[in-house]
Amino acid sequence: MSVRPVIVVHGGAKTISEDKIAANHAGCRAAAEAGWQVLCQGGSAAEAVEAAIRVFESDQTFNAGFGSTMNSEGEVEVDAAIMDGATLGWGAVAAVQRVRHPISAARRIMEEKPRLLVARSGERFALEHGLEMCAKADLISEEQYQEWKEEAEVADRPNTVGCVALDVNGNLVAGSSTGGVTGQPQGRVGDTAIVGCGLYADNRLGACSTTGDGESIIPVVLAKTAIDALVGGNHPDQAAQYAIDTLIDRVEGEAGCILIDHQGRIGWAYNSQDMAIAYMNEDLSEPAVFTGKEQPLAIA
Ligand code: GLY
Image (cartoon, rainbow, N blue to C red; front, side):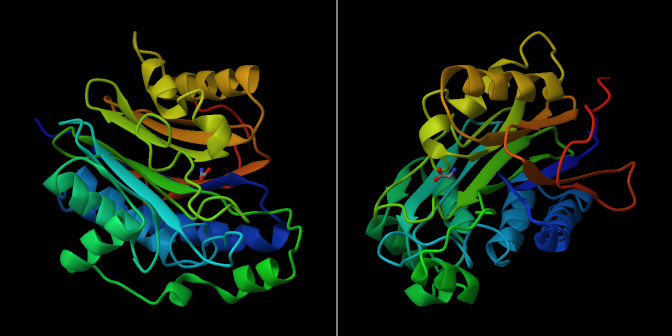
């Protein structure tokens, strides 16, 4: 029996200033549309998640791929991961440079052998597997460079992007991609590439992608905490809120998460001021897009 596909994307838990709302809406809509095209043509959830995140990684509005935030040395170092809920397979890269689409590297790693490849090892893998490479500087946007040069205190720091998808075969996949934290020391790696923290997927329960402060997300294993909260049939919106409440209770920091459960129900929660989100399913003619959650989703 064919399952009704669903996709949810997020462009990060953050403060979104008035002048950035349109760009966040457009980017989330484009990412959801790219993933949806894959799903509604019968493609796999892994293909859809990769397609959606590649859109974010090409858009300087978001902290992933091109336009990522810069580290203390004025460089972009990126992390990404993907997880397949059917097999519990996963792949990840961290602190890599010169890789145009880190999510594609993560997916190729997952297909070959689950592991996390860091820095030169991740770059070598991408090169040897024919993935698109670029000069280090090609991932730096003019806006991020100016902010770094001026050591600007910017209110609306970008944050990690991600996607969760359910395909017609009932497979759930989660993916996340990030440039990390502004001014981070060279080689610092947050939650995004770490299974259970930046993402999790299990066909028996659901798929989750997180965003926010890695140092806060890691100790509460945010994505797995959200997935475990689905046990017993809890709605994904309740599970997402439980995970964020756990983070608030136990550590300081801002975070958000998106969820799809194995029935295709969706949910999200965050404790930042805003969070850019879009979702798409067969009932909609175009993606529903948000920069915040005005009211709880209807719990069905
Ligand atoms: N969530 C991104 C990071 O902390 O690196």
